[in-house]
Length: 328
Image (tube, rainbow, N blue to C red; front, side, top):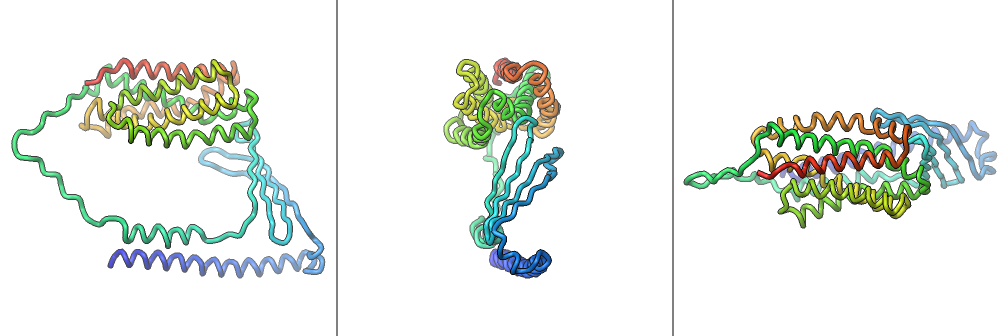
């Protein structure tokens, strides 16, 4: 019964949203009719075949403010092209074009006709039974390292060194590739490879390398990034090498986001796990904050190859820290 109620509530919300949209469309049509009358009426407007509007805009994304130019080209009666031109990284221009189309309440239909039935009928409602330990002597506890001294210091330093890399590269990688002469459109496509590479690496880790120790996974991930830097160094910063770098960088980051939680658990155990992660995250957050600034300074003061070499140096230092840790 409760599942049916959830479904009916979601359906009512969708119908209410559609009704509100119809009412809003009616008001919009009234305002549009008044505007057409103010512009000279239907007789004069019937001769107009196109209209172009230009201007500037400001957009706030988190703590960043983006400025750009906006152009809207109208081809009457029902065609529109919206173009945004911005410089998010100072020396690279990004142009976003969007063709106009009729708006439909897609999210409402998705929620009511897909998500709501799944939530109402597909998800199990049973509670898992509490695990009961078998009678007799308790099983031997897995050996773990003490969360103090050199073992903990090496783990914290390794993750802090790595935290510098994605923070710095995410802010400057595309700009660096552009300055090496790769076409901006190609650079944007290269940047789009990062996300799928992360997901692929996590899937492979879950399906193929799930029995490997997390410390081995972390070492392998950092080694991938060092190999990616070597690819750029020996093949030159061209589109194929840059694409390979972005893919390997994405795979490294995908594996390291998992290792950030599994390595401390495997080495130090479950006791005080939350506090342990907080102690490890402190230095990493500091490195994430300074990463973009430091890499920008190195690229501006010295060169882009020096900036990439700095990334490789941090990766090598992190790999050495992980290599120095001995499994319990």
